[in-house]
Length: 256
Ligand SMILES: [Zn+2]
Image 1 (cartoon, rainbow, N blue to C red):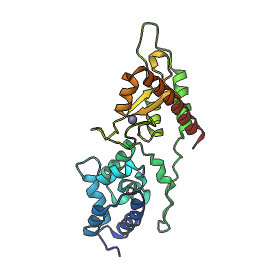
Image 2: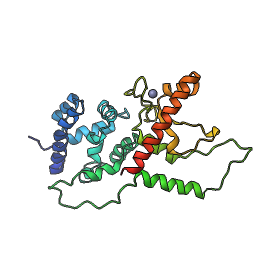
Image 3: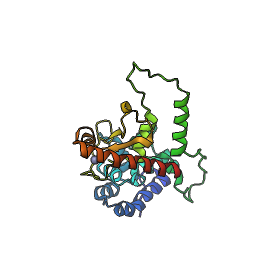
Image 4: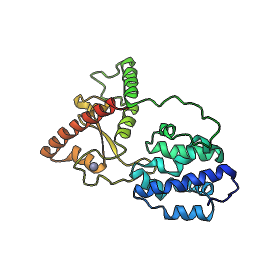
């Protein structure tokens, strides 16, 4: 039974949404005991506001869900749903969206949530988010239009930030070396980004392209092995990563 928390009917709906989502959190392997206690002690809206106001950039629960790639079960996601937005201030909404996007969460997933029956006002149609393929092709066009800047004398290579972010997204922020010692290992840096590095399998200075087909995400350890490991180890790893980069790129190009 959901009580009135001062946020009216909509506040109750929000709380119901959070409580209904708890089995999904448990399925994802995270039992949000504290979260449930907070809701019980105050309300769903107050709990969400408390989490958003927290000095920590992200809560324990958020980090857990990020690890399991289930950020669509987070409070931040619920806050961003169009029919709950009026419960929150602009600052809270920005904060929720910022946390999600900083963790490479595709906010367009919000549009995949069916509009609840009780929601009378139709939510405005937003254009679908561009696909991996569309973003790659747009960036390729930008690069083709850019005048060539490198000459025999310049060694600076222009790196595409678009490709970098696409590759991070493609990898879900995880190390892509299948032999990685800690594939589930995640550390979030001060800037809220996972500490991983985007690597060009064939280095730019050896003529490898600055293109997702030649890029993988590596944890600092695997990156060090690839850069400073023993020759045979490095050669094998490069071969393996080259295949992974190509295969992941092709899959993403073929997918949505
Ligand atoms: Zn690794």
